[in-house]
Length: 81
Image (tube, rainbow, N blue to C red; front, side, top):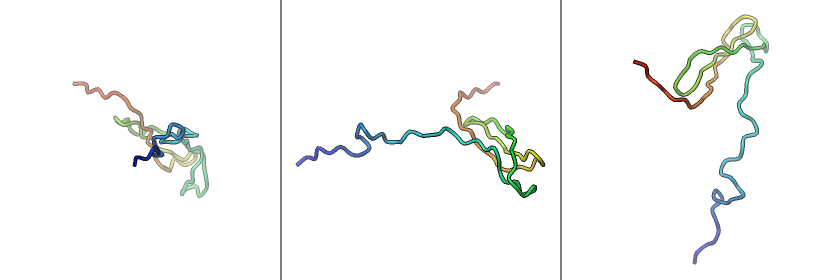
């Protein structure tokens, strides 16, 4: 006997992945161990990689490194000789 039930992931009214309600987070303040409080941050580009760009968050007061972030993006890789 065959079952007419469709698996949950294939039901038309239920997408496999729910839509995201936000894109990406961007830090405006982080805790600085040197200043001993939450401080505004500056975002500095560290590396440009084939997968995306790597950024570093710096304390706006003492320039202490507070963390990093990868922003992934698909791009065409070209090698110049």
